[in-house]
Length: 136
Image (tube, rainbow, N blue to C red):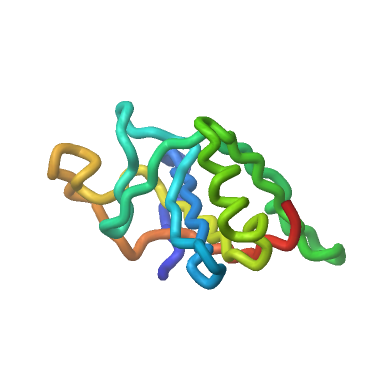
């Protein structure tokens, strides 16, 4: 994937952040896609995949020179017991892969805008950050 050149423009549009939780390597697990954003009250479609709006707080992704690697944390709402059910089925998600995906709103799939987005570009995203869950 290429890094969006708009990062360096003075007039930037919104950065959309999405997460993919891949627990398919764990017994009872599968992949889940979610985002702390919604687009006009709807889920976000990126590269043909749907990311459902869900209350999430993420922290600790910063990288600093001459320091330890970042250890990000995700706080995900347990609305309706959704997350508890996944944790119970997969052994607290230990070993599951979490990908942080970011792009500018202007590059989202046309499906987000009634089928028309002349600036849609599925290749324009920041480098994906991939992490493994080591504790709940």
